[in-house]
Image 1 (tube, rainbow, N blue to C red):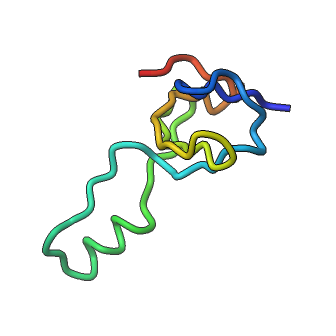
Image 2: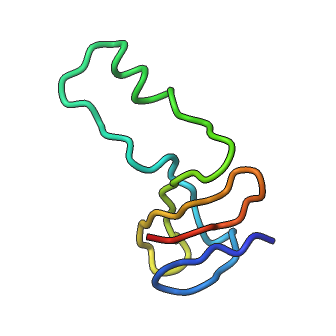
Image 3: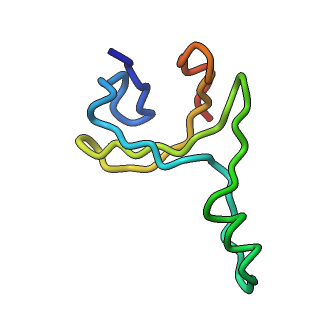
Length: 79
């Protein structure tokens, strides 16, 4: 079982969380089809440390950003 460190509730099991995708994606204000396609579907898929948005659904309900290592599934740092 993967334990995810919630900055408000501490380490909790992964079943309590939802991954909301890559952190730092900015929604385009006025965009053509190509820009919307890039916003909706194109994401970086790095090997190594990756910033992700998470939500503690079955706990405090808050959104937060964590850095997860994509190879080992370990959380390296929390901002």
